[in-house]
Image (cartoon, rainbow, N blue to C red; front, side, top):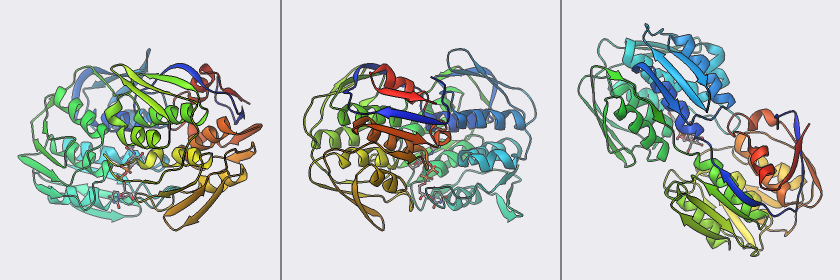
Length: 419
Ligand code: UD1
């Protein structure tokens, strides 16, 4: 189904069947940025063909790395030319994750000029932790006319303590360190599965990254990295969204290829709310027509409950019985879906970083607007559970991060069309 300007959902159908998860956006973006570091010709497989991924491919091509989508969700990389220093303004401002190229450009050339990525709808999202890490590695940094200029005679390994386990900062510093002179130790590192995937890719190219997935990562700098074919992990946020789709519609869905250890907090919370979940070697089954009970969630860095699943879980709490409290600790403005859910009959009160949701049992269809990526998924889930027709506008946010979600839901029996 082509993604057009809006979706129409007629709710109330219990989803049934098997669906395959796509590759992880949040692993693909840093791994593609890391291709700046990794010379040679090779293929990255299981790359979801999303708008944000296309932006990263444009970025790579503009910096001198040939990157081309090939059949079967692969990207062919040819990195055999000189790397350019300046990241184009329109690409960095279109997608915050473009700032991932800073560490790799620095490591390859010693000089990077990258526009400030700015804030986004869910919060201000500064880059101070990334820059502090680079500074410790011997980089002079200045911010002028909206650009961050980074210059170093010799990128040097250092012991770096992150003030917060930022996913992006951990990845940027890790990438820079792979070609630095000496050893870098990142303390209070983020532990997300996407960090492990990036480390595995770098190691497959000859890097020495140890401890990824723990709070201390040690990187021994190498003189050169050479690429091999690599496949990206499944998208745990897409998996989680499909799990909630099964639970909220009281359906029976098997998500093939899903890794349970990437989504453990969601499994725990869904079970606590009354859903039945079986973990298999080759995927996760969510089923059972049980009534859902309210539970509380608090977002935290991995292995805590992911902020990227908060909005979708809130949709489930809207139709559960009792009162649930959602505490968002990672981003300061990630409750924009609340007003839209209220349009569908939800009873939610926001008090600073907490949303108090009084379950209403049944939502009703309404016209709603997507404000950011995960909020979009939350509104679709609410529409699947609601009585009557929901029209969802603002699909440009959804296609940034979900590959074919409407089609995947339709294949499970959802009554969902685009126009
Ligand atoms: C990544 C994910 C995003 C997810 C987030 C948290 C990608 C492409 N995106 O974003 O989907 O929601 O992790 O799991 O992987 N912060 C600072 N200074 C910094 C860096 C971050 O204050 O230098 C703050 C941010 O404003 C935010 C918090 O730290 O409040 C978490 O940010 P971070 O972990 O860096 O998230 P991203 O890497 O941007």
